[in-house]
Length: 127
Length: 362
Image (tube, rainbow over all chains, first blue to last red; front, side, top):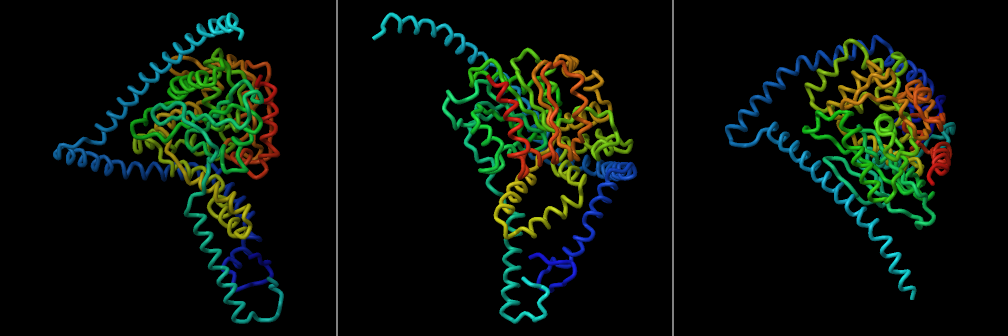
């Protein structure tokens, strides 16, 4: 697939682009990295993002309110209801994990208590 | 193909070449659009909480040949941890299992809308202590070693400083973003500390920060390489199965993006990038001040010299602040991901990590 920049092969569709790349890609890459690392880019991209968020925010809120109303009218849970339910499930999971920790601790204590006993029983019955 | 040949190609030759281009284009399309099988090393889930999972890898060596102290891998919160076990034959997990480590992997999972308020406080002092507790119960060891990568290294560092008596013996930090004093080195810090950048607006709008947004940000740091160069590289090497397989696996991992919890994002930008609280000693998690001097575990801090996501200056400064007596700074040639998942990682990075850890795993 390779092709030098001095030649042109019409049967390699990327040939022209590759020849150009060989000559320019490094320089292009360096200049783009320099650009995105500049203060001007940081300012401009932040401002563009903020403008988009400011403009789309009211529409998003209006849609959320409308959807919540529709779901309420249909006697269905809203996104907020499901989020609250999921949060409660996570809290229950935490409680279960606390119980699991306690069980592990009990198991460990029992294991420690049982070990010397089994050693002594081996000692009593070497055969 | 000899392009300097003056003879015009005949019809059969033209047809064959067009057919080859067509085949290559199909292969290219398949590789870009499909998923490779990654994270194949056998493992079992030993703990779950909310979206988080703790995996235990099935050991490949008998118990008597294994290191006594288990190793916990903690990856970043905005990507899947599969990059640690990318593909059979090129996997850090595989490598460490072959060297006798008892390996555990923490997968934070993808936060849902109900997790948008999660903060570093929760990851560091709610989730990680529970993970450590379970790891100890499963492994039967009171001590453990921990490897944190990227934001996983940040969480691991905070945990190690706050819970220095929890059995952590050694801490490995990979490309750890910890020190944000220099506001001009690196694209992320420039963008996020600009006065036009408003993390509160982003979080208020989205809840969790979309993975696409984070992915775009990471790729935009090197736009030509990521948006063009990567695909050109694939096209150039499409007849090379080794390159193709590696590219496909990496692309599968890169495409598997997850959102970042809104609370964490807000905190990352405000308290770390803007105010540098960890290094200033003013960071407080759940009412506890994070004092790096209290971090006593042995530390290996691995820095990627060509890291554009976490520039070396964001990782180096911690060495003078931590209370550890046994601490080593290791510089490796390569980028943020490349040092651990690149084709040369098995020679340039993994052996250093393994040898350092082997001496601290008994």
